[in-house]
Image (cartoon, rainbow, N blue to C red; front, side, top):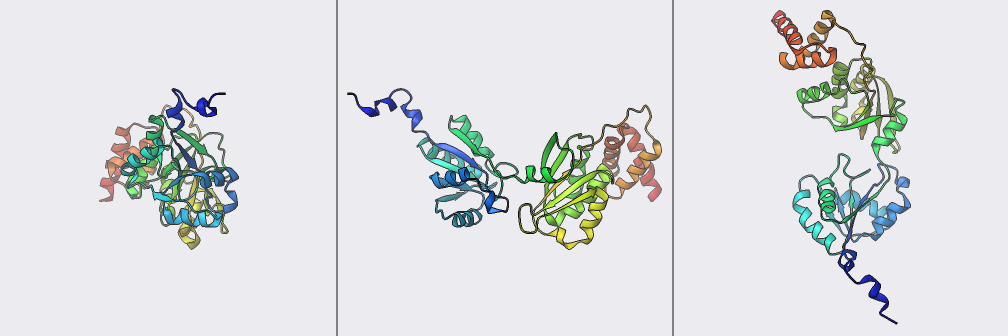
Length: 299
C-alpha cells in the first residue's frame, strides 16, 4: 500500500498549508448572545487580532479561554497587516474581534480582510450580534430597506452638511452616536429632516439598562436635552426614510424662507441655501437669494 499521507501531497499541498482569517461577531452586551460556533472559533484560533486587548481579555476570561492577542485598531491596522498576512500564509488561523458586535461595521478589520482576500487566503465570517439589526428590529419603523451611516461628523457644521445629503433618502437610516452628542444630533436632524420625521433611539441594547425611545425627531430632541440618562451608554439611532414628495411645479417661497431662516441660525448663507435646496427641491440660486435677503435683514 502507498503512503496514506500521499493524498495531501501534489500541486495543491502548498495551498493546504495556508491559514484562515475568521471575522467573529461577539456580544454587544449580553454574554449569552455569543453563539457556540463563535466560542469554538475563538478557542480554535492561533491568534486574536482585537480592537482592545482589555475588552477581549475580559470576554475570554468569562468564557474560560486564554489566547494570544495583538491589538488591531484604526491607528495600527495598516502597519500590523504585513505581519498578520505572513502568519496567515504560514498556516495560522487568526480571528478578528472588535470590542462588541460584528467587526468592520464602524470597527477595524477592513484593511486586513481585503489584503487577505487579495492574497488568496480564506476569510470566514462567524455571524452574530450587531447593534444595527437589533435596533432595526425594535424601532417600529419600516425597514424593508435600510442604509447604515455609521457615526456622523462630530463638528456641528459638518454634521448638518452630511445630513443634508440624506434628506431625500427613502430607506430607513441607522446611525451610531456618542451619548454626549445625541442631544445635538437629534436637534440637527429635526432641523434638517423636519421635526415630524419618525425616529427611535436605542440605548444599551441587550444590557441591563436597555432602553428604546420612539417618537418624532422634535420630541426625541426635547427629551434628550432634559433627561440625563440619555448621556450614558452606547446609542444606536434609527430614522425613518423620507416620504416621496409630490411633484410640484412651484416651490412655496414662504417655505423656502422658513427653512433658510432656521438654517441661518447655525450655518453660513451658502450652506443654509444648499440645505434649503435639498429640502424643498428649489434651485440653489433661489435658496441663496433668500439666504442673502434674510441674512441682510438680520443685521
